[in-house]
Image (cartoon, rainbow, N blue to C red; front, top):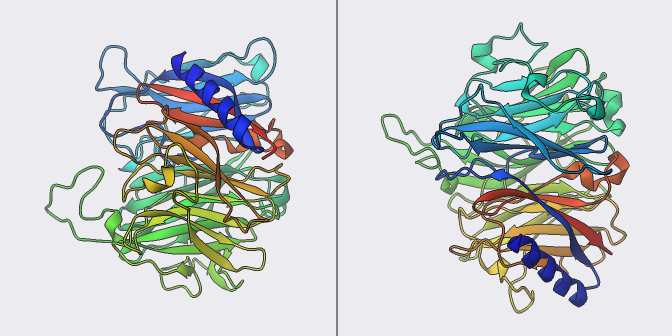
Length: 485
């Protein structure tokens, strides 16, 4: 409980200093984090590790096998957010051994609100699809459902409903599965679907991104290949809906470098982040069927099998050269006015800095570095620490913020540091008025994640910001109340 006391104490000090702040209301442990060289829990591209629906919060993570530290098991946990019993219940899938020490192999979790099924994609890095789905009603009737692995069917290498697709074409060389609930405002184009799956088919530098949608009680249908790599691949910062139901995506490209015959490391190699370049944007008004550039010009059509390609007109917002320091898959979010915000980093001025890129309501883009000391007062000096391949942060736009605030959740990139800071800026300040509103000197050993659904009261959440943190030895969930944010 030492970490809990440190966090609570520090949060109280910050509360006294700032009118807008975050207050710790709970901290809980999901399990022991496997001591692999490459982290399997808490990667920036996990969408999502924490999901709230119908009064329950769910978590997806790996734990070590009790008898063999070289084996991990996918695990799921849930807890009621109200009532007398709010402790986590958890189980592990003992019928699956995860053995690759590979930080790509995360677990991503999605929930169908319509039929109450839980969906997971896991242990994916250029291999056949690993997918499991629960029985119906698990999430819609949680009080009537005993929490156990028997709720789930077998591991599938295809998506139910798409058995007719050639698995050797569509469900091979899979990486980065991401789930996203389809909001009510987007239902006119959903054809009854309530969940989106995005994934990459192909390898680093040679891959395409595909979209699928899930129809409750029926199964998956294919939307199409919306991003085609041409001697490169897109690394998306996320995929999000805005208040109009438009799907917005930003990404960077990584060019291919031939590594035939080379002994390529799992996490690096000649196709590494030094080959990343540019900041790209596109959006869809019809759930991914067609895609538009910044000036509302059509650049892709799934019916015509015409994906976005690197030379598509008007998609490159900022030209950032290779070796320019931009990292893949850092963060994006969309605020209540429909403005998309991107967090990434550059060394284009000679020093690696975190940058904030955002699109105004009139489609104008702004690009500014996060401020350094002494302009920013930070106990962790967090903005002075980013490195080329350091821990990635997250952006959060609190849906109920009366200030139209934007939060940047930044893990320190300083050597041997597990410090974490949360900065805040506002629309009135043109998102340049950054200040630290909550900081802790330790507790974030890897990349922070958050529960987008618990934060959104319009989607049934309670407005609490839940963070998924790996502190070096354990996997924890830190719950923060937003005070005048």
